[in-house]
Image (cartoon, rainbow, N blue to C red; front, top):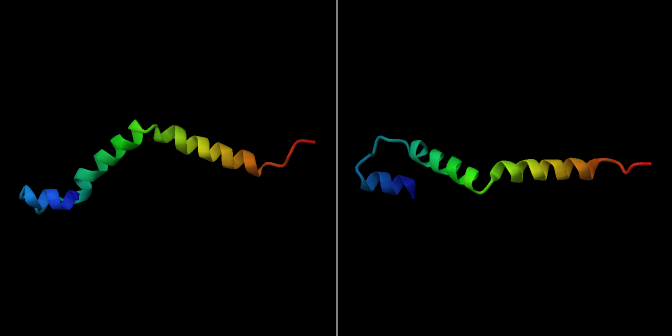
Length: 53
């Protein structure tokens, strides 16, 4: 999608990653990605611990 838009705007030499990476980072922050990643890591670590005696 990004490369198609860049071609339509005449920016053939601009790499699509230059445009798409900021949008991906903004989307990650908007959906609260850090909380999701940290929460799943904590849950997986807690699930692997042996039960207390």
